Image 1 (tube, one colour):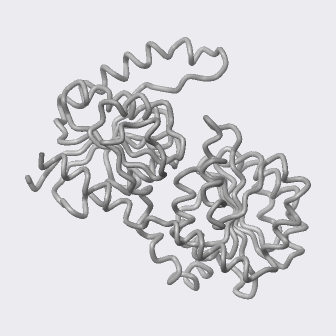
Image 2 (image 1 turned 120 degrees about the horizontal axis):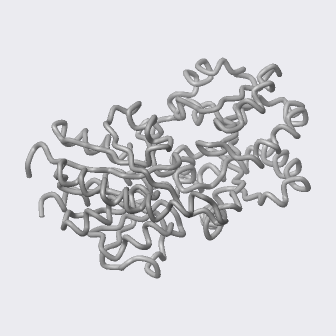
Length: 365
């Protein structure tokens, strides 16, 4: 095996595709310090900021997904697809990677499609219990498909599929040792329980509306709130920073500290969030987004709830049930303990290492 293998990693659009990609890159770099790693993303999406911040170069493609309604974006789609395939061909020919890894999103579709046409080995990392359209199309030609959930044989060729779990940031593996440092970092009151509210990297409109409506009631429960509202909503909700016991953040730079400080978490149930929450093992109320393909967030959350590892509240139930459900959990230390233990039992902390093992096998072969 050569000491400076080359890898292209592609995935983006949301944190759920970007952070697993960065976790894989970090593991590759730790094993092969001289490896060359290049990211490819969509030129107008958040990966163009997040990947360079993590220390890796990235090239952008002019690509976007199909909208569900008639838009100019849809009319441009064939042109964008052709452009991104052509650009991908140029990138692959000049960089000459040993393996190309895709973590989902439309940019990864173009790169992996061209890679398999050129005979370059490809690995797909599918985070969800219900795969996205890009990965379903690419799977037929992929050398290896790393998944996080069981029973995906109906989408992917069984002989190329391996259950690894989702890659997560390695700094989450030791959050329980960081609690006092985390409380200090966020300047939190050590005598109060902390509620952490997460809506995903871009924010979650309905969760933000819920917290804004319930904020005085929540503070009346003698808790403090760390509220990641997302970049799209920060201007609308930042005035709540004037309330004592509330911190509104557009983005959380130190997620390890946010999880370490939390006693209870309210979160969307995107695949990466579910995997992270299993590893940190905090009691969580999942509020799935109903606006995603095949309702996969509800399926992700339900897989945890079926093992008594979380509480699930649907958006349509929030007005009637939220206060009762939250108060019961806040006041029931035994339920908090049992949810923590059960979700932690579902964690797959070695996912990143296992995925990289599979990538390395392809380099060797």
